[in-house]
View 1 (cartoon, one colour):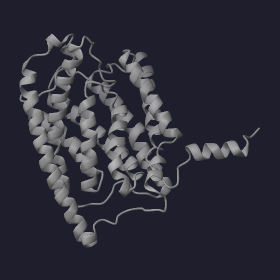
View 2: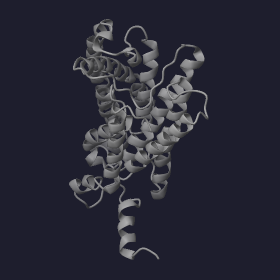
View 3: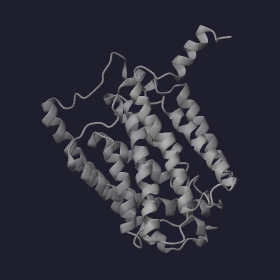
View 4: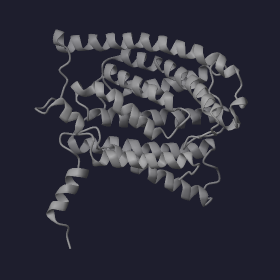
Length: 339
């Protein structure tokens, strides 16, 4: 017996590709993809089908690549195809891309210093270490291991995050609503990260990448920024480092040397952010002036709905379902349960 026509219409309105496209629709696909990959990894690794663990470089790398592909890349590629939309943005010149890449230095400094400070304060309050849903421990620093870590821990996730959060979700936010993206996208990025020790740094990273996406005009700005942050981490190894969570039981286990570099790193990061904010803004204004003249950018979709209505359309059933799923995953992570 077929479902009533009214039920079909309700389902189509709730879960069909919305017209016009909005920012909230796609998040359910990231949530379902995350659950699927983690459940699949649990079955495969618990059954002993693979000889390595989920915390090994190879095991964590496989899960990360699969998670990024299914939860982020697939929706970012196939959903815009239904509307014939382009999520990559405009090419605004090599200068913006180079500046985006170099700004990754500030992202690394923020991540390293914030992780060290936040972890210490969390343990100082009497709490235990909360490991990310995905993490790896490499016993050696061979060239092959470093190359694999760069690929699976940096380049692949950076591509997926850029395509999904700063391509697909950004596509659903109109030009005159983009200031609101500074609140929405970092929040969703933090939910997806499932990484408690890096939560403050992820929030800052999400906000900065919104700025990079807006000024660069394409998804490759955020991608190069994220990729650059990892590369700078290798270059600054021994100068500014992230604490190894596997070595901690209480706050007293954290060497004081981590704090000697944390505060200066934050100050340097703020200066770098201010510098690249100015430089990227100048590139952005120059490009718009060359293309659109003195009136500025007219690269806007535009419709006859009010601004608040366009933004509010993203708070829909798929969005809230995705948020609920990720909240459930966070609860399991805090309980030490891995799917």
